[in-house]
Length: 259
Image 1 (cartoon, rainbow, N blue to C red):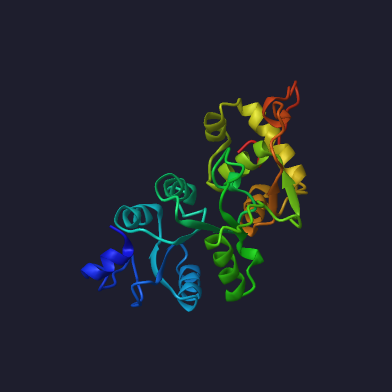
Image 2 (image 1 turned 135 degrees about the vertical axis):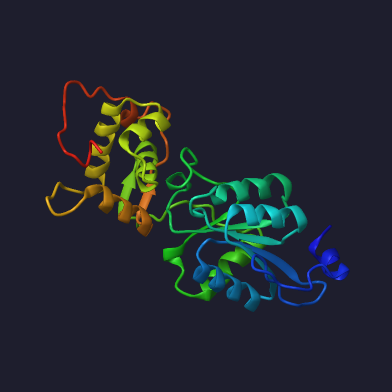
């Protein structure tokens, strides 16, 4: 059942904690917002309402999937990082497989999907927008119109990003940001602990983080991760040296690296 048909049947006549929809005409356009931060969600909803969309919203992947089971949308604005649960890429994959008519705008702090979803270097067929590029509602409204008209920009990452990481370094940084220990990272990526320590050492160098008695480089790295100032270089068709290099007999006594 489409949203227009559902509206006519009266099922969209009330709001609840997970979905809001403005009253409108039968030929209105319909939008889904998937964003875990309430203030950002409210901002996006306001921009879409001003652009003459009727809007429903979800704060996590489970809410979004439930809405997709019931309704059709003209556009979906999806954040990649949705807290502790599944990422926004799950929602995007569902839309692109089951709702090809729905335009997708990725609105995220991260310069690459691989910073949220390991191994996911790009998401084709979407308008990809970093939150740092949005200076006002007009910027977001333009991105939505590009997506709905099929003129989306699929460039991932800002060329002005301050740091450029390899895919392997991005994978490790995303796991550090999730709070994983080196042993847990080794299990997750099927690496030895020493290889993980070597990779973290290279990661810190790439982020220009030097050892200091008064600061934690792991915390500094997570703070950089959250600012959206990282771009992930495209994977080359060779084995990544960070994951496969021979660490030899080098031993690092830095507690931050051996965490």
